[in-house]
Every structure is written in C-alpha cells, then in structure tokens.
Length: 460
Image (tube, rainbow, N blue to C red):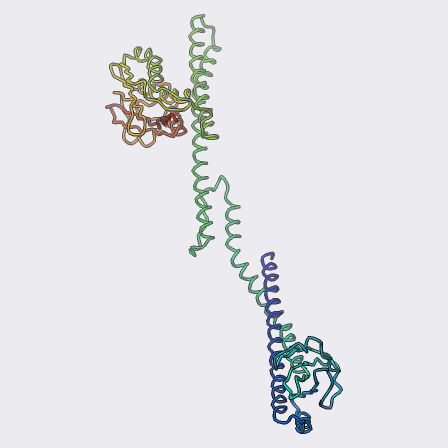
C-alpha cells in the first residue's frame, strides 16, 4: 500500500506538472496567433497609409471591419503626442501611450497587453507606423473569447483525464506491486517455516534470473551453511559427550568397586593413580575444547613475537626425548637457527608438539621420528617424518576432523582424543600457514607444516 501511495503521489505530481506546462504552452501559442492576426491588420493599415495619406480610405475600412462576424477587430490611430486621428466606432477602454513608446525608432515595433472589458479578455496591440509627417501609433484589439473557450475546454478535459488516468495507473501499479512482492511473501513464509529441525528445506527459484532469484539463491546458500554448521555442532556435541562419558564411567566403576568392599592401602593408592590418569585425560580434553572454542569465536592471534624455529623445535625435541627413549624410538631434530618467523610461541609449540607426539605415539619400538625445518621458496616448512603404522588411504581425507580416529591403531586406548591434528591445523591457519599430511599404511607418515617467513627489515 505504501508503495502504491508513493507511486500515486509521484504520478499525480508528474501529471500536474505536465498539464500545467501544456496549458501554458497552449495559451502562449494561441496568444501568438492572436498577435499575428492583429499584426496583419496593422500591416494592412500601414499599406493603406502609404497609398492614401489623406485617410480617404478610412470609412471604407471601418465598414469592412464591422462586416466581419468571426473576428471583431477595433482600432484607433494616434499621432506621436497621443492624440486620436481616426478610430473605429467602439467604446473600448484603450490604454494610453507610455513615454517609452516615443523612444521606438523602427517601424512595426509593438507592445501587447491583455485587458478585461465586459467580462471578456481582450488583446490590445500598440504598433509604431510610418506616416508622412512622422511616426504614428496604431492600437488594434480583438476579444479573446475563442482563446478563453479553448483554454476552458482544455482544463475541463484535463480535470476528467487526470483522475481517470491516475485511477487506472494506480490500480495497475497496485496489481503490479502485489505481483512483484508476492514472491517475497512466499520467501518470508518459507523462511519462517525453517528451523533447526528442518534446515534441509530450500526456497524454490522462479527461473526468471532476476534479483529475487539471486536473493533466493543467497538464502539457500545461507541455509546450506547453517545446515552444515548445525550438523557439525550436533556431531561435536555427541563426540564431546562420548569422550567425557568414557572417563566418567571408568571413574564411577572404579569408585563403585572401591566402595563394594574394604581394600588394602596399596589397592587404594593404585585406584587413586588411575583416578589421576582419568583426571589428566579430562583436563587435556577440556583444554583442547576451550582452545578450539577460542579459535571459533575469535579466529585471530592475540599477540605475536619474532621466533627462532630452530630453537623452538630443539626445545620440543628435548621435551619428547624421554618419551621416545621409553618407547625405544630414535628422535632426531634437524633445524637451523637462522630460520625465523613471527607468531604466538605457545600456540606454535602446541601445534608442533601435537604432531611430534602423534608420530612418537604411533611408531613401534625400533622406529624413527625425524623433525626438520627448512626454507622452501618464500615459505618455511616444518616436517615431521615417522616410520610408524601409517594411515589407511580411506581415512586420509578425515584426519583433520575433530574427534576423528582412523581404524586400527588410532584408538582411545592410546590416550588420544582425536583433537590434536584439528588444533594444529587451526593454529597454523591463524598464523597464515597450512598443514599437509602424506601417509601410507604400514609405511609411515609425513606431516608438513608451512608458515610464512618473517619479512626482512631493510635499514633506512
């Protein structure tokens, strides 16, 4: 309705301005025609003056004017002082000569006026003529009854045409607006039905290829993203519940066993140690979940510093050396001091530590884990190569998903939660890098982590 009212107001304004302009132009055109008729009479009198300066033709000319029925024209002839020389038999209230008319230098200079007499508009023309004894002034007039009637008919037609045209156009505009906005109502109705329980429902395109189809496509893309997000949230919630349920059930079972009968001090100590292991596992899981939630809520670094990757990786090598010796694995770190980058030290340590820990965890006794760091073009590559059990080919596309574990050795019994690679991937992404994984089952795994190098500062 508002759209129709705005359209009606704009249309009424345009029609009003158009009719006013056309009326003005019509009146000007008819006035020029009247002036042309009066100027023809003035030219005729000028010719008669040239042929008969004694005015012997005056009576005959008056009789001819009185015999006309269509155009009733009156005149009077004045000298330069404004004295009347001759005139037609009329009581018309002629206007007097103005002083500036005596300043006219050319013949046929004229001035027009509109005067009202006996309820009718009259057009009066004052023209300078050339006489034998000096300039003369001729005033001719005619009534504008025809002009008045024509303009009256014009405005009467306008007062009929404008409301009819406005009604037709507004009705058409209202129908067009309803038809144009009806797809939006359908979109709104469909969108109002969509909820978290039926995110699979999609809007239908009309096939017109217009802006509304583009809007439908955009909304469908948004629903696709929401559907994927809700699926991830549901899977994530189920995985979290499953991961938390396992240690909680283990602790409950242990507690029920301890309460079922008396135990020795050594048995109580062993039970407390098992409780401690489960608490540590829950603590690691909670920390990993909080870190992932932090990246999802604010995916950017809080602080950065200039880092020496060689020093950082050698420190991690010393940290994991005891675990490698315990498992009978050879751990080698080959990194130079000159390779630098910028980022959050704690986050990058965690990203590298997750990958190195996985390599040690899934490499059998007697195997080898090698960590290298080198420049590769404009990037820095940190590579972790192991000779472990590897990952089956069908599991490779899913290894960076949260809580995903490959079959066989990637199991809960190893103590992992399936979040390590996901966290490493997010950490590298917020640093502007990426992570690649190459693995063959029973032949080991190579994980490559790419980081942008720190720009070299050129002294001024």
